[in-house]
Image (spheres, rainbow, N blue to C red):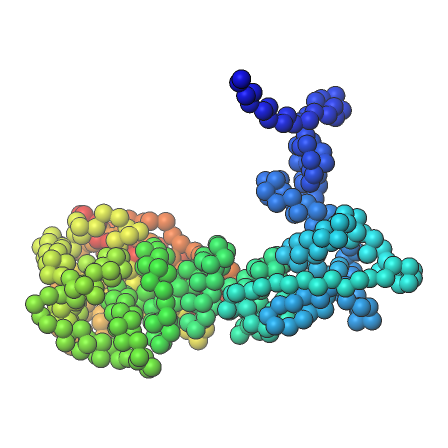
Length: 506
């Protein structure tokens, strides 16, 4: 005798308006898919999320029942509806405040469901009993005991108390020392508005001491605006600020790699960036060091390794190669700096040979940098940090026998301009001593492709100004000796001005 396969239950159909629509055969969905979609749209809830988690719709509907002014109303005279057991404490809470937290709302609805009650209907009844004009004797409120386990070490009792306080009061002050714990508590409670407040506080308080933990928190909770803010802040402050403090040790390798790859990275010169990276490696290998090391100490440390193998070729250096590949070593042209690189035996010999060969070919061809193909990733870069006390700020740079001055000028309280200018070597002060071993080009013109960029913050938001990529012949007399000026209007300070350029093929 053959056994017939039992037929799968079919979805019911109901005529809605002039169409037949599929509907769900059971709760929690009481209407058809189109009706459910329209309900979610009206409640400003993601339709896909409701299909995965039906409680979202119920919680949202209950939230709309509660008057907005209940959050700020004095309720100390009312007895609590719920006792929440968490972190070894018992916290007394009231029903209207519970529904600002999706986690607490779900626990509460589950508690109501255990009593064979309709959660939404029961919530409305309890709320009506607490509204003005209702006698409390008409509807006694039975306290419900809820339990919430938290395993996140960031969530302290103080942080959790601050999070619960925000259920009752608006704009509760969040201390910087507690913001990570409050953020973690808000995430566990699924308290969206508080979570975003914590993110805003963190984004506005980025410092060398907070950058690591704030960045890791952004990664942990997949909060892209926070991680992006941390990366942007590091792009500007790695060399001038973080690279001068012991907090450099704490910078995660992943964050450092992202920053080094960014074309927006600010540095005074490529050699400054190299020194910062060498300091970071030193601090990783000497984690008991409590004070920021002098650069000479770092050089002595790397020089102490046996000379038969470069540091990056050793086992300890292999995983650091991606970081140092981000450097533009061809931008380091001073003989003293190149000799220093060879002396510390840090880079593989093949790297140094390639850098030396590029310099040789450039000098042989009057400065033409044939090895540079892309301005945004390979150009020589220099920077000026324009602080509030400056009215003018400049620096002289030399490359393959050509001398340039990069300069920033403050015209008034909000107006600035930045440009570069070719200068004669004879116009330099102390030229005979400072540039004694520097080659000097006698070419009347030099073809240069360049870009000038300036960045600053105003009210926690970054402003970026830039020229296009410009190709220009620089002579020795005005007006051909001056570049196009980047003129900006901003109240932000300091201003990070970056000059990227390459000597184009003549």
